[in-house]
Length: 286
Image (tube, rainbow, N blue to C red; front, top):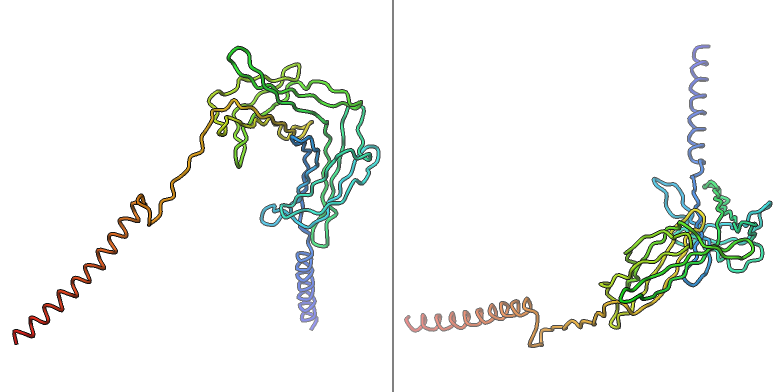
């Protein structure tokens, strides 16, 4: 009897432990990951772009979640609470917000935070960035055309100074995307000078847009500037002829298809007439 009770007790403990493990698995919170990037576009609009993801089989975007943005100094000051979009992004526009702290070296420190939920763990990320400006200009020396970029950082007292050794990528703006054609670093004066590609096509007037971009720099984030110039090779608009069935220059595949179909129809007409005549001649012979 004691042995029976002992077995029942062991089985009960196993069931309780198994049930506890199942309950723990069901209530295990999923991991989230948050990243943040400082972006300054060609209109000089400064934003913090936070991207929130949740780990399933892989990390996927988490939408409709509240992300908090803080300015960090000795204490943290809440700047805003923003809900993520379908891409898992929450975008905070910096502007002239008086709550944002800048230290004597010109660094702005931020923290983004997601508090989590009943099924998701919270996450946070901190960054410190300096403000900077990129300026694109064009000049010509003799017969050679040049693109020039000047990079300056904005210090704690809003004084500007050249940024040395900053990697800048050069793009030409297309209809749907950017096409990279050069990559250089700024010199001791914060400048880059490159020859303009004379074979680069533009629009019908030779106009094109040159984009200079610093991408995800550890100090300055992502900064962009652009300029327009009519140094491109003019590319005339080409009108494609819309060929239709009723046109004299209809597509050949359509012409051949129509001829084949009409030939088949007329063949069947002629075959029917031939069979009618053959039947009548056969009746006369009787």
